[in-house]
Image (cartoon, rainbow, N blue to C red; front, side, top):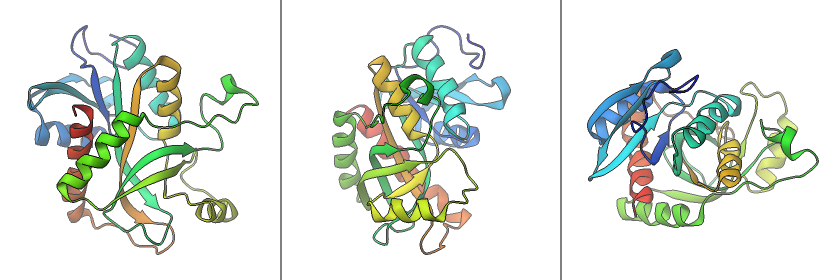
Length: 234
């Protein structure tokens, strides 16, 4: 048990999926896991552990933004020994070829700042995904027929961004999408020698202004979870 996670020793699996929304964690656990049971509800940040095809999996909400995710990932690694951590979340598309409902596999995660910036100081560190997970996720996406893009994303530390010039540079430099957590996840995984990946569903688009209707989200997010689980145990 930690400050933010109430699970007992042994209740967190080696493989953890990390949606930002705790209710998405509940939905994913009920939809994809067998014998899923609640192992954490501290501060309403729900976490569940069950099995997928015989493999133990924990699905733990991580909140919004890098500071929140950093708390959960640090505790999952340091106190519970998590070895594989995969973010499953939504993102905003930033390229014309990236469409609503597409899946992005984040090879790298650019950011202006993160909770690790104070440690890295002047270093312009380049956080990246684990290659084995990335390769397996690409194969899984192909197997289920998901329209997938692999490349760099941008992890923003603000939601209400008032820097259109920065977004223009992201688009110009080929950034596929924007979200708020992956850069810190990749940095922490590198620091502690763990495997990490972000599998993201494009739910809205910064260029076209499109947004995924709420009634269509479950099917699209299901592809993302399926890809993450297959990649974790390939």
